[in-house]
Length: 314
Image (cartoon, rainbow, N blue to C red):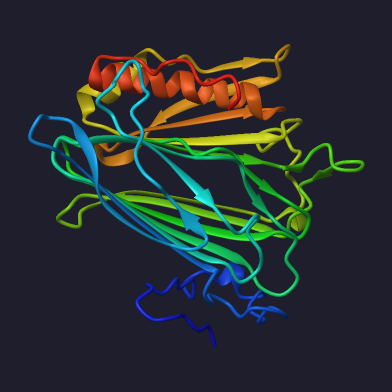
């Protein structure tokens, strides 16, 4: 039985049969014990001067957020927040909850300080639940660094987005196939990655649901139409009003560049919810650059201003 220390929300993946083979208690610290049950709650709102500020901050180890920063030259009034971890890579039995709320007409940029490493897991799995709430006129950029799974990694992530029809979100996920340059390479040697993203309106109207389960033991990852010769996969969800989504869609060209080993495509989400943008590449740098370029187009369509250039050390 999983145990959780007091006043921390439970992370429950009983609904995911793909994780059923990985329910043994770890040899050391039990599932969800202190230090293995990260919790983060962030809330953003406008102050009296119209500046967006981080009004709410609640965190528990190993997740760390210290304060918002204002370094975005294109939107100096935008708070930029970096999520850090004091626990190193995710290990089996880790459970995380992240809640982000952007209140009426507020805006924010959230990222991570470094890539998320998923360590080798022998007994259990690592799981994360994310809840993103966007009120009327809210705008959020959530662009974390890539996720890097090691051999025998088991990871599940469930993201729920609740968005007002006038709100906008650009949320990216970048997944490496593994530690490409570790020893002789460790590509697609993880056990399972399960990723779900779903969207709804504040009244509960369901908008979309996307779930992909990657199990390398079943084979087929190198087939054309799956990963082919690519090693990096980016999934970008855009929730936006139809007029903004149409501008973004028309200005985004799908392509396959065999010389640069990059490919990208875009489609509409159902129920007028927004867009889905996907990128494939062989190295994380060019994939991240494409995602950021696309996110800049989203901000231009919604806020009339682009993203500044990324810091060279990122």
